[in-house]
Amino acid sequence: MKICMIGVGYVGLVSGACFADLGNTVYCVDKDKEKIDMLNKGKIPIYEPGLNEIVNKNYLSKRLKFTTDLATAIKSSDIIFICVGTPTSKKNKSANLQYVFKAANDIARHINKFKIIVTKSTVPISTGDKIEKIIFKKRKKRLFEVVSNPEFLREGEAIRDFRFPDRIVVGSNNKKVTRKLESLYDPLIKKGAVFFVTNRRGAEMIKYASNAFLATKISYINEIANLCEKTGVNIEDISIAMGLDKRIGSRFLRAGPAYGGSCFPKDTKAITVTGDLFKTDLSIIKSVIKSNTERKILLIKRIEKILSNNIKNKKIAILGVTFKPNTDDMRESSSLLIIPFLERKGAIVNYYDPSGKKKEFSKLSKVFFCKDIYETCKNSDLIIIHTEWDEFKTIDFKKLSKNRKFKIYDMRNLYSPKKMKKMGFSYYSVGR
Image (cartoon, rainbow, N blue to C red; front, top):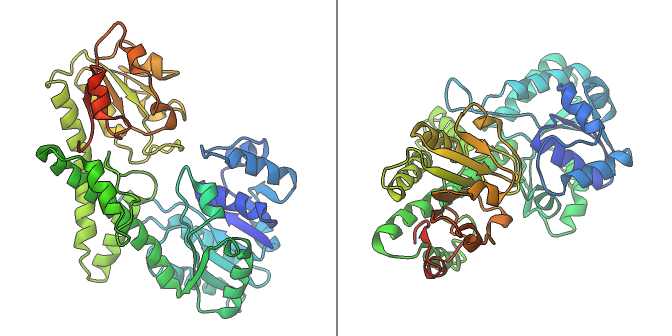
């Protein structure tokens, strides 16, 4: 099939590359000429394991094309995916849909034959209805069908999630269009993915409801971890035992920093706005948002306590600053609050992240990016493990401690408290 992906951000690029890998011809379109030029030179603008190989492979085979020519891409394609960003609006907590509606207007101008228009961007309930109205204003003849097909790609695991999805959700009442999309996804369905069909609003709701529930699990286990710390209970015992209950499941029950990234923060906010719009109080999700915000403050207070409220001139090492491993995404990461706070208090902060230096800290005069773990931790008073990159799971702390004593705050519970204590380290973790 011939496919057009409008928006070459995280979702558009990963999905486009993977669709091409299934044998389709894919046009990835973006107005950002610099990004398109970069991709045409074989350079990938985001950090995602395995993406570089799959993009280059399909680009060389000429199944994957990068262009700023939207008109040609639309006219040449059978299925058009809208993959533009839907960030939180600056005016309120709702999703900013200006890029989605612009894409809809652009599509309307260039439709030359029947097109399946698919919203892959995360959009509030009823957005598909609005897209349909926008296109109908310019195209009275029924040359299109608007479908919802939300993505469920985890950053750092996106290639695997695309190839082996739990489910493929399609929102459409048009059986002919549904069969076409089922054919597109057939290679994945044959691997065991459930092809789930509902109406368009139902598909839009499924995406938000799923992310809000996963965010709830994270906030819930973090709050239980707070209680464990005050009662002498090990949160890992609680998480494991809870996870063995098939009604609950073990995933997203790991205590740690607040959730972050491109999805959970904005999607939890957006669904509460939709709830208010339809006069439904989503009180549980609102509490989750509040709990997650407070989580970041609690982590800072714990750092203050570990350092006996004496932060000035302390050398602090931060290992990992992204919101999760295997991504370069800094959005809503707890480090964005922690590091500036420490610098304001007079600390000297060295940080290292495998995904590289971060522009977010470039204006902080006492914050420095280091090239590896050992340079970061050298002569530190406190080492904070913020993100659970694999290389942080096997640190030789004895090698680090030859000439200096330091404290360790393991926000990801990567190490055993008993073993660390036995080696003589002042070790602090979460919920243990």
